[in-house]
Length: 283
Ligand code: NAD
Image (cartoon, rainbow, N blue to C red):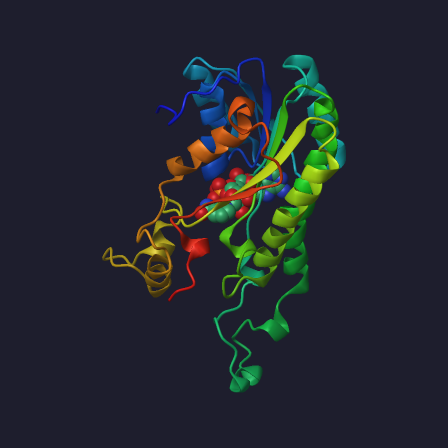
């Protein structure tokens, strides 16, 4: 695969959390193609390892490490290894994130009769532990890796942090209040950090992906006969471009934000890549 724009990130060390997953493994590969040495971090080492091996077999530099983004001590150990094996961190992509089924309501709307239906997950019996897990994974799981790796970046000429927000941050999607709230916190935190680090040459921005069709979510988006599910129909009707994005369409936004000659005065933005979803009121 080729990047949509040519960007030189050689001599940079880029740390990517959640790099065993769909989007961040792709980000890691795109950054490696720009010449950066890429560190792939994931809770499941084998997933990160597999992508690191692919990067290396394409002739670029990558290393994988296991870590939980909520475990500061392990992250500190990983940082020490990265520093000694590859150098100090210039780029941090905070990609680990996601939702949990128990933090998800069964239905979009609550009706008064639902109170007695014990088979439903409603607002009233949402599992608070799961809500907390979702908040922690998405928000604290961005904050801690930043606390650990940003000290490497202080007062470099060019350093950059990218957080991953979501459409939920602009307007919450039904059913997933914890994930929506956590991603809203990520957008807000991106602005806060951008201001906080503005005197240190660290730029902090976020990407807010719209809806992407991947192998992993195909069964949620489409019925076995290939027709769209009801939720897919709603997504497509709410996306002015009338289609899902291809994950690769996120790469241009990522490289623009990372490449200082293109975005040297850009910090604190949450860039939607969404076919117009976040701009459309539905009317
Ligand atoms: P994914 O589930 O494919 O990947 C997430 C990765 O994070 C997994 O490999 C998982 O093992 C890892 N992970 C989970 N918990 C971790 C932890 N505690 N410590 C370290 N690693 C951990 O998800 P994805 O679709 O690639 O999403 C990546 C990011 O983009 C997430 O923040 C997600 O919320 C966000 N996002 C995705 C979409 C989308 O359409 N896929 C849309 C908007 C936002």
